[in-house]
Amino acid sequence: MDYLLDGAGRDGAHGIGARCAGLAAASGLDAGRLRDWCRAVAPIVAITYLRRPGAQAAVAEMLALARE
Image (cartoon, rainbow, N blue to C red):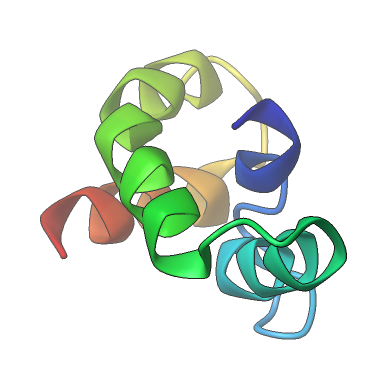
């Protein structure tokens, strides 16, 4: 999940959704399940971003993902 969530705060071409799709295609894993796991972990990861300068976009994306 760390690799997938590291895409937080980036545009759609490099963000979490794109990384889930790419990993699913490369590994044969289910993209929906990967996204569900990311969604479950997102609030915890958002907390780690709170102390990073300039990470507002990442925090916003994590919280939006958690609310889906």
